[in-house]
Image (tube, rainbow, N blue to C red; front, side, top):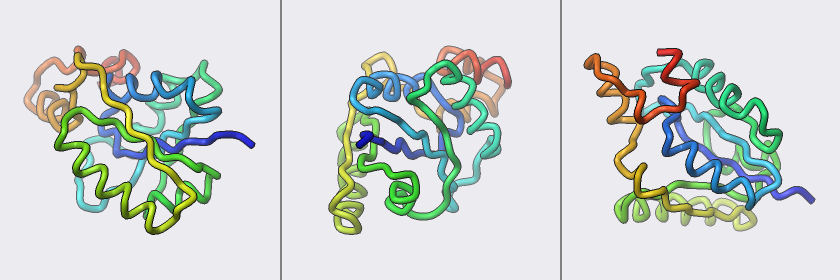
Length: 154
């Protein structure tokens, strides 16, 4: 049985921090599905299609990584794609507190799906999509925070 993992997020845009987590998780799972989620409480800068395209371009030569768009509960998406694991990246202690609350809720909804936390490399702790969007909106150079596939398409 394949060990399938879902890495959910808005990825608006995909950052080097996201890539760091995915790349370091590759040896842990047979398949990582990057779930580009629809978050109704956020107004995205980039379309769902553009965010999914970035994931697929970045990992075009890595058969263990695929991307999908999903809406609704992450647990339901896990069931749809056969994922028994959820991957989340942690930059700060405050991230852990928030993510643990979500992991606890997910465990209540389905005890067969486990959440894994990976801490980001220190050089990426300041890389947050919110900050990157602000840099882009204000005409700054966001390239140091982005994979080339993303920065070259802005």
